[in-house]
Length: 237
Ligand code: ADP
Ligand code: ADP
Ligand code: ZN
Image (cartoon, rainbow, N blue to C red):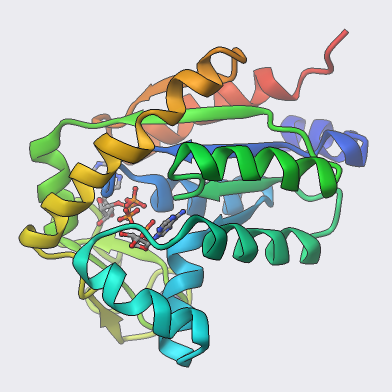
């Protein structure tokens, strides 16, 4: 969209948006983050992806996180906040950021306030993706991703355009997450309800929360998020 590009390019660097995508496992956070990267040149900060990379690399963080993630429980707050701190330090000030899967506890939300201040950023929006529980199970059980670039797919809702070939990078290898099992999903949903949902009232009190119907088709959800970002980008008087 030409008009939007021009408007984004005209933004002063301090106005680069910082957006939180909040929602239970399978709500579509990663899918929407991927679309925001393509459409708006934002950077995705997914603590889940960072932790999986640490597990694969066998770093001390990965060794600590592995068993916790396999059970579907939450990794300690200090571990994930340190990952976000490092990542924020690497991103140019003018580039917008999307927090995907972080913060996940009230303590992480408090830590994020400090990190944003330190990296001279301001939270523009918290978008809650609302999805029914049965749909979450269906989405997670059909989820797979490109083994090379990480692009996300679904057995029924989002197949690669050419069967067996990644739309983004052309790879023919795909993988499924070891924690995407019915058993683990139940734990992850319980963790979300007990520890993550209490973040919403905190941001609500600051007037930052917008709700999006995550049951709609992927492109429709993306349009709803786009509309919210255009509003959030408007300079405050
Ligand atoms: P999250 O990052 O919130 O855990 P994902 O973005 O990985 O969720 O989405 C979970 C699964 O559901 C993926 O397989 C994805 O392709 C699919 N999906 C995402 N959004 C939608 C949607 N709006 N409708 C149907 N399927 C979706
Ligand atoms: P999903 O979006 O499907 O819930 P993620 O990829 O965001 O999955 O997270 C996978 C797992 O990584 C979580 O179940 C948890 O063990 C760990 N994890 C990711 N982000 C965080 C976080 N911010 N705090 C604590 N644990 C996290
Ligand atoms: Zn790929």
